[in-house]
Length: 352
Figure 1: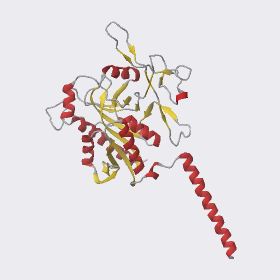
Figure 2: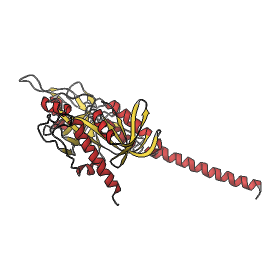
Figure 3: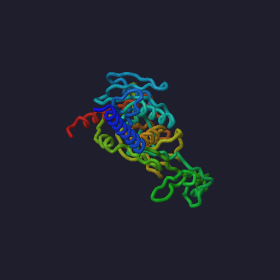
Figure 4: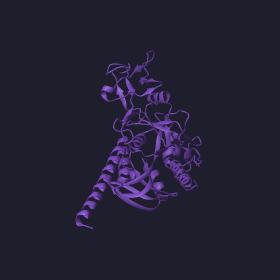
């Protein structure tokens, strides 16, 4: 073999290898690298559990085996095994901003196949009770709004309801914008229209780029929701810290429906009624829909479990005191989360 022929063949192989790398890079640019390629801290495939309520996270951590802590930007991520699943558990803290930030950190630093959000929520559906645990099928952010000067449908771009020139989109129901929030007027007078109209959120991911899309609801993963429907956890009426403190109605597991999240701590019964009438919402918190948005942007399936602490803006303080003071808040929520993890591990281990 001549030196020239060897060099020519080596050069051709190098060109082919370079072309292969170019095609691979183009594919990843077009369709997005798999989520696990970003695992900056630890790369074992895991379920990510984000908790907004510290006491409930403590129960999960107490049952986690082979624990190891990893600190990222001050946040404590605990990896280990929980009821047959490899997990990483982190506390988000209250608020949409914290939930979004911590969820993205989690996805960037660990190889996350699915997400679970756990914590407490205020009730919107008046037929639910303190201590019930919600597993909604979809989450929305109705407090993302267009605040108009009056109750007429906004028309900043010309036609009523058209907001495209602003890069926005009103939330719609039955083909028309959802109604604005009305306040009760003084005695004998009509309602006051606030001009607060719900909006959809813009979200971009590797599947819908470069155009992106607007979404109002973020759907929970169907496979995870189906497992949740089969759960029969033992929810308690009296808390473990003080068994003398009990809620008045036996708590139930409620699977399905819509729940909402927002930046406001909701203690307004009028706005609660509006959310129930307009959206048939079950509950409200300040984190889950933000996690759902980040999950959708990263194409990671998710589910959320939320214990009802009260009827948002209600005045049943006896049950609320029992819920928090007795430890019922965290124990019922943890019971559902742990039951789900056990059932999920069995599902994965079952013969296909």
